[in-house]
Image 1: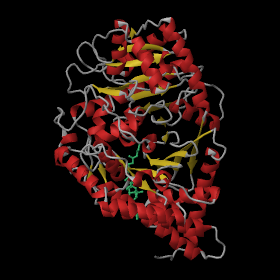
Image 2 (image 1 turned 180 degrees about the vertical axis):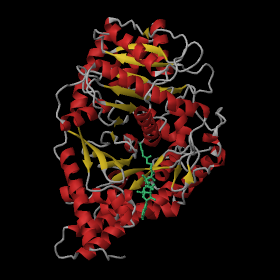
Image 3 (image 1 turned 60 degrees about the horizontal axis):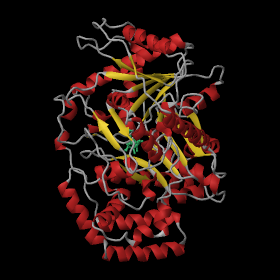
Image 4 (image 1 turned 90 degrees about the vertical axis):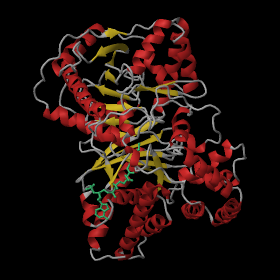
Length: 629
Ligand code: COA
């Protein structure tokens, strides 16, 4: 997904501090996980001419002929000046840094963004619904999830995870090293991020458990250093639940607030030395476990929406929004009616490492029938008793109010298309991802009679410390197809050919992007180079066509898992959609979000339109088996 950063014009004077940060140079475990890390290539700077040419192609379907002509002129001027100068500055930066983009990106996309982190930035992931009910069952399942997560942690800590691959090429594994033991910290102008990896001094041994808004620190190791087994974890969680039957003040709701407001209150809280230590307990913990209130008697459809809301924002202060710590890199939520999932703070990692962890945990939960041998002596969970004065309690009330408004501004829906999955595009010799993106273009065109700037996340992890770039799914080819699809004067054979052309164009753009030849981060880098050199923002970046190209009404991402999970995140513009999909062999799960304040968007309508596109495309291709380009 993308962030609102793309609309921002300034660079903060001070960079977001990563206190115990990660870099390629930091101490790493010796296992296979990092065996090829240093031999991965560095992110290249694309050629200026190529980017500018591609940029013009990308905006063609988005602007009028008149706007295009104007932009063409601006691009030509930029090509002469200041483009080459900025390109040179960017190339110099690329020589000095292992990755010219990643630090900029961490600040601009995350730490500098001042809006609340849930919905806008933190994605939620819904796990498959479990068939249990009641507090005891919730505790048993939570103990399994924790145990599975700790089992995965062992592989990260020892560096035993295999190096991940994309299209047969190895990927940078640094993100895996940052999904545990990390936390974001609010700052009035810019946030910071802390991470305490296993190779750091005195690495974390505890998790934080939240129940009824009360916080507990639970050491998950015994005195002999062994991990607690499931039975021991269950007993510890039971004790925590018994101790926290009363609902406490909604401290956690502060992490849902806009960042400057939260930062001010944070500073008030940590003025008290004891509170400061407790905050550090949360920040240093391995992850957070939220034992949630549930809603019984929901229909299957209602339960899916409920689960999506729980993972995305917690459903409000009366439900679970205060039973969270949204600054924590990873938090698991377990409800008493079979609902579970996670939410993650995005500063240090994208979805795929989180999805891989989820798969491991769920496989572990399915397989692990008996408890392992118990660990030795364990300490009781410690309650984090914050001292909250009236001023802070007032702030909590304000944050509650803001949160209620905020969460009601979002609508989220979850769908499963069961007609086919990746299997069908593959039999048609088409890339499933490109197929789904082109189907989405069709769905959008059918609803609005036009196209829009569309963002799909592309991994840059083929490069050291790589993050993402943008695949622009709206193209001249996709528009040619979507215009043709419902044109009764055209034959199915013509439509199928246009569809295939659009899919191929998307896959070609994907290949260029994951190989470091995308245009979005390059254009951003040119602008940031200008700002760092105290030069004016170039005309190209001030052009209305540029704003339009970066107003992503469709912000999308593929996050694939073996288990039936689905990720959800908010739209990045007020009149847009957030859409995340999980293509499995025979099904496609997807989550859609919109802002309720926008009368023109409707998550349900887009979901239904996308499923109709899938049906229609299957029929189209089935009716033209001989179609060739
Ligand atoms: N014919 C038959 N099969 C094909 C095919 C074709 N023409 N093209 C692709 N396939 C196969 C692939 O071999 C692959 O097979 P597998 O299921 O055995 O692995 C499968 O179809 C999927 O390929 P495709 O749909 O093309 O997508 P991809 O796996 O290459 O992924 C992206 C594309 C863009 C999602 C990926 O490159 C990426 O960047 N992922 C990370 C996104 C991210 O970071 N998201 C999180 C943001 S928070």
